[in-house]
Length: 63
Image (cartoon, rainbow, N blue to C red; front, side, top):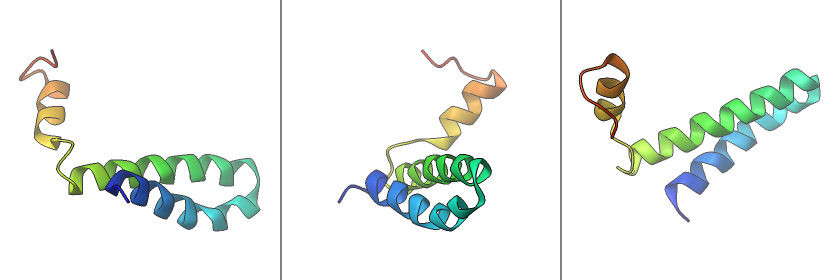
């Protein structure tokens, strides 16, 4: 499986316990899935965090 899919699945599994707590649990599930996917992409080398940081701080343009 791709690292992004694995990260999203792990985030969903971790957030599954939060689902028992209503809407807040659902929002936590979405947050955990997004974080899991981002971490997996960084670990897989598909996202360069330095470039994102530089773009956000204005050191370099994103285009």
